[in-house]
Amino acid sequence: MRLSVIVPAFNEEAYLASTLDSLRDAAGGLRAETGAEIETIVVDNGSTDRTAAIAREWGADVVHELEQGIARARNSGAQHANGEVLVIVDADVIVPRGFLSGIHDAMSDPACMGGGVDTICRPRRLPVRLYLRGWRLLARLTGMVQGAAQFCRRDAFEQLGGYDEGLWIGEDVDFVWRLRRLGRPSVSM
Image 1 (tube, one colour):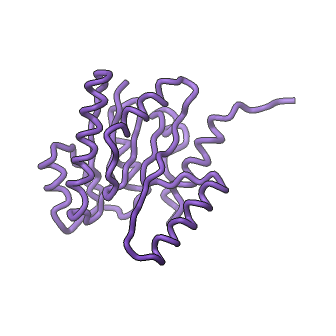
Image 2: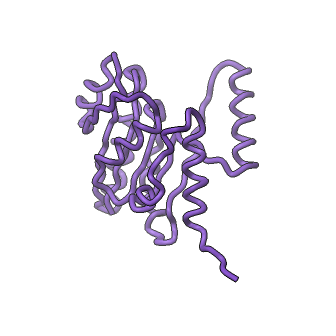
């Protein structure tokens, strides 16, 4: 199974190297376990800083998408990807070593269409911590899967038409809700 890791990025020079370093470590772990192929694509969404240069320095393929928007950047990365499984990771997320192995294991089940990986943010300021805890609780209660780390089969992504570029916010939650509906068998009477 080939995985394509897509990292949408807009002016992320302060975070991107750490993200790519953690993804490289996770990819090395998966390759050692399974021999799986992993490609990393950074979608430079019109950055004015060193985002693209840093991506190239870390060995990622760089795709330039000048039309602003996270949904557009994710979709552009998917268009350039070669993997059977698309893994979309925000440019400021540090993944654990077992991140890609867990996704590979989940996607080894033919019934699995995709999903998301919960990310942990540890801000220093109490109001921000409380705000994020509230969002995490709301997500669990409503079945939201936010886009910091999502994955799916390429064919499901294409069938859904990718992320809805018309949404200014919530395109990640919308995508997973549509993916869920696609994965549920229809009931006829």
